[in-house]
Image (cartoon, rainbow, N blue to C red; front, top):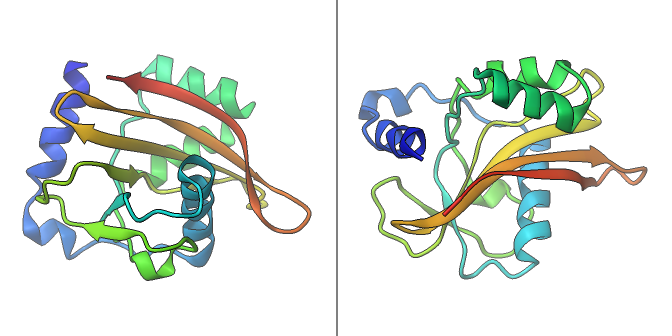
Length: 167
């Protein structure tokens, strides 16, 4: 639990200049985030607040890497996730394919805030791995890894989910 608190403090303490160097996600990354939002929260997201930038997570421990390997069945997504989560990106709510999400800044005091990591893809971009977390107060929240697969219609569907922390 302490590493989660330290990670949150580090995220909030990022200098303003660091945000200017953030990347812009592509349409496929927004499609994956949208699929997670629809699956977890349904179509009406008026009560959900979306973080304005992606979260930086650490997947360097043996346990985390083993969990991702178990979840995905390959090391390809582990390596992709490690590389992508270190490059934060801005999140534009207009690009999300969901109904009425709201974007909040890091300093906003909202009741319920959802954040995502960057999305890791396999070489064919048919499988995606993302870390999603939700916070609803000081000691209220959860987060975990979500594996999605693209169906025949080109839509992203949940394949597996592993909760990594819950409070």
